[in-house]
Image (cartoon, rainbow, N blue to C red; front, side):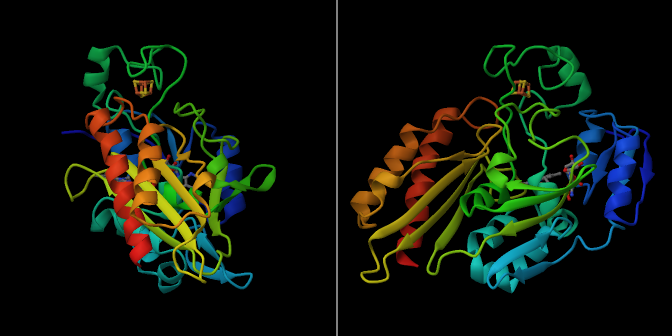
Length: 330
Ligand SMILES: Cc1cc2nc3c(=O)[nH]c(=O)nc-3n(C[C@H](O)[C@H](O)[C@H](O)COP(=O)(O)OP(=O)(O)OC[C@H]3O[C@@H](n4cnc5c(N)ncnc54)[C@H](O)[C@@H]3O)c2cc1C
Ligand code: SF4
């Protein structure tokens, strides 16, 4: 049986106290729902002496409409609340779909949107017991100096594996943080780095506390969907996560005005595809086939997650086709 190691839990009541506490305890980790952090501690993937529990910090829960159509979701909002939110379902259906596909019902009640955005990267050679990793000789992500996936000491290509993030990237969401220097905001697409190591994967200073996710006012008629590739339709992380948004010309209901595909669960940074060449074309079967072919050609899954990389690449084409057809027929 895997046991939790010993650590001290701190329970600040305000945002400022939480961030200040982190500056005095640099090895501390923030604890939100704990659905990822605690299993990882059991696997000894991390060994913090202190956890800063965010549950008592006020003002971090809820979905609100701001600026006449934009959305602001507090970082501690449970994923199930995001999935059930009438405003989210109306404005960004793909975000509700993605939140509703994370893990299982208990995880979604405890797990938060903030924890999903700040999720540790995952890899077959890393998400293992301490004994397993000892036998391997560890790896570059922690305690070792070699990446077994790319067979190089250069960088860690563990996958950013959260369901909601590709959708947030596709709709140009902004993430708001509180840091020791004050509030800080950046586009969610810029939060992730090309290196999946713990101290390098996020482009924010150590101790930055995610406070909210802001989704801008989206253009009228923007359609969105989320497709999750996994072996079983059960409690499983994505093996590929595909978010698609498209706006069609209201005059004819078929000409593409904007198009975005983002693939997650592939590398440390979600991949956003440049599909401007398809704008102006009708979203018919031929165009859908061409877009799916383009995604397939530019997708390169690694051996970092379960599932043969060629199968995952093939599924990128299949799910892009299904997603685009669903948007066209919506
Ligand atoms: C069996 C199982 C299956 C799972 N399947 C999926 C899945 O299919 N898809 C998926 O996306 N996830 C999955 N997860 C992971 C997890 O349940 C979710 O990602 C969840 O959203 C994590 O949120 P949390 O609040 O529990 O985060 P925690 O576990 O509390 O934290 C996760 C990380 O984020 C940091 N963090 C949390 N909140 C903040 C904040 N506000 N500011 C700064 N840092 C913060 C923590 O320090 C920690 O490093 C699974 C987990 C398990 C155990
Ligand atoms: S991608 Fe490489 S360095 Fe990163 S966790 Fe996997 S084996 Fe380790």
